[in-house]
Length: 487
Ligand SMILES: Cc1cc2nc3c(=O)[nH]c(=O)nc-3n(C[C@H](O)[C@H](O)[C@H](O)COP(=O)(O)OP(=O)(O)OC[C@H]3O[C@@H](n4cnc5c(N)ncnc54)[C@H](O)[C@@H]3O)c2cc1C
Ligand code: FES
Ligand code: FES
Image (cartoon, rainbow, N blue to C red; front, side, top):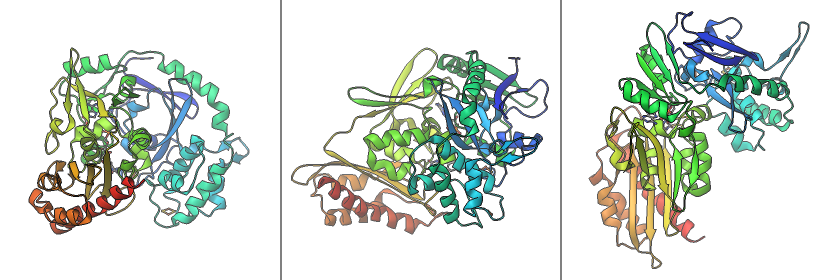
């Protein structure tokens, strides 16, 4: 491969972009690129910030066993270099064309037969989300279909017929032309991915580092401390799209396998910070099902498949959805530089509004969660204006240790959206410890929330609403924990 270039598969062929020969910035988004080349304008731009799904494409990636997995993602939130070593599938690739005829893909056929399109602007994105589901080869149900479409906005068709189309398409057995081509695509991807050398891309505006290993990443971080780190880029790409400001130096760690692992030791779960939110969702569901309400309503399927756990905690947003849950679970972060590593509790790692305890040469590599203890009961809830694809107005993650005689021995109540950082309700916690676990106790506790938080009023909600709901959540928490204790 030439220096200053990347390779990926587009239209079944190896596609090379060499920044010595083009004049656009390295961090051009995949959407911008597709719309600038001939015959690829089927991918639409609606919002350029991950909110509409009109730009959905599907990426096929090699697993460690050299199989292909397909993921629907928002192309407006992906920088081009992240395509290196993957297959980019666009709406133009679904149908099979000969010089004299076009055979529609089963997904497209189902959309037509279910009357699932009117103005059609959203339709390419919807077809690609359904195609991503079709290629996942799972047994679908209504909820799985809804989850797969939660990042696609349609203003005029109505979701009933779109859901019908998805169900009808995914009932058929997956023997499409993508399956038939897989051996050839796998060989091409293996050849692109052969080299484990780091890639450095430069254009007039930017230098973009694409390391292939943890060692390379930490060395680059040491040598280029001013480079902005990206993983899923779902936050950083929105910033670029909205401001048209291109970061002069980017360190993209999304190709590093060492960041993407789940494992269990005798007493802990260890999660690489590069694991996607969608993969985290499945993992957490196995061990801490009580946090489904948070993870089920995290962004959209397209974003969950790109966004990472590391990006969420390093953002340190007061409404970052993983943070309350991970603090209640007593999670620690592993932080590494090229010479050494250190561990710290997540609640100490977050030092203020969008601020973290991370030095210029460090990256966060792992999250460590202690295994579940049988006497602790958990609860979580995310409150947002819309049910699907919305950020939290406020959220709670709670953990109660309750004795056999129903006394509260210990409690952690962590709220998002009520202060400049995710924060515990210290007064309420102190009040609850030693009390009987009853609805009356929780009603009393709810009145104390205002001692712990002075939330702001903003476009999302008012101070009064936030405090009222924060208290109400304690009552919901009580009912949920009690029914869990009875099991
Ligand atoms: C439409 C939309 C909806 C969203 N909905 C939600 C939601 O419901 N809930 C929610 O919590 N968030 C939401 N987000 C925010 C975002 O998707 C998440 O915070 C996501 O987890 C960020 O992960 P990322 O890998 O994309 O981060 P990136 O954008 O790649 O990075 C984010 C920050 O983390 C730093 N970083 C990333 N990885 C590391 C690392 N390993 N070590 C050190 N620093 C690192 C980066 O430098 C950067 O500052 C939404 C975003 C969009 C665009
Ligand atoms: S253009 Fe709206 S999600 Fe990408
Ligand atoms: S068909 Fe018009 S927005 Fe969906």
